[in-house]
Amino acid sequence: MTATVPDSKSKLSKKDFKSDQDVRWCPGCGDYSILNSVQQAFAELGKDRDNVAIISGIGCSSRFPYYMDTYGFHTIHGRAPAIATGLKIANPDLDVWVISGDGDALSIGGNHLIHLLRRDVGLRLLMFNNRIYGLTKGQYSPTSEQGKVTKSTPVGSLDAPFNPTALAIGAGATFVARTVDVMGPHLRSVLKQADEHDGCAFIEIMQNCNIFNDKAWEPIVDKKVRDDQLIDLRDGEPLVFGKNGDKGLVWEGRGLRVVSLSDTAKEDLVVWDSTDPNPTLAFAAAHLRETIDPTAIGVLRNVGGVPNYEALVHEQIANVQKTKPTRSLEELIHDGNTWEVS
Image (cartoon, rainbow, N blue to C red; front, side):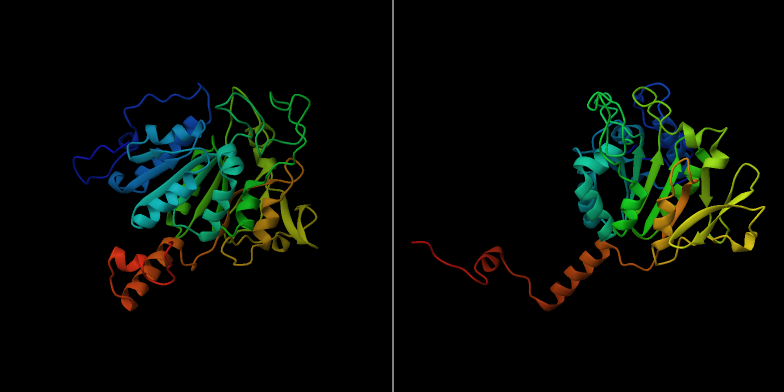
């Protein structure tokens, strides 16, 4: 789809990023909240619709390009990272965003995802994680919890689920974040930080599928419990959480441990630093145990100074062009090792 050309260069509002397409998600789906936050964030960032391309794979989340009045491409299952990589290399100045789901990104698209992250292609990937295959009506996904009963696992899944943020950190991603569909201000803050990153940004969005996996995240994101179940990582601030701000995290042995601030001084808590080149702390935060420990949200890793892939590709091409003359196709075909078949 192509974007509607704006009449002027005046600042756009959220409604300017809404396309004329009817939004066709199930009523109550968390995707609506994400769409609203992305449109609002794009407006606040002052994005040029003519310079934005949104690439998606297959799944409920992948309808996203239709609902954004920007350029977009609804591609094939699991291959959005590969197609987006080609687009970014062809036009490094283009602002490329990839929309995917936990099944699309981590199952058939898993190989493409990890190579996108290790190459540090300069785009942003939003992975909607509802822990289920929603479009195909409720099969278990790579992030479904062990023991999950679904249409494809009628007596419970035996698979240990992927931890998307830990996977991204392990693949060498330079920006990794986690947020929640219904926490609009937090989601928009993460989107803006990702937009500032010079490299590949991976964002896991915990999203509710109210039809096939309703309330999957309720034990940690419901308003009644989220203060005790989530910890928002903020650079330069100690890791404090709890409804009364009375709990925190210290580094003990090989990982993070929950402590009560009635027994531990605030000065002894870990002070968060997403820019640390050493991924150890970010990896530990990604592995905090759900419901037992607080689940980390916010930016887990934000490392700069790494040349991104598209810049390296164009630098390499320029260097070759300087040292080798332009040749015809016939010269290229007959160059090097050739043979004749008689």
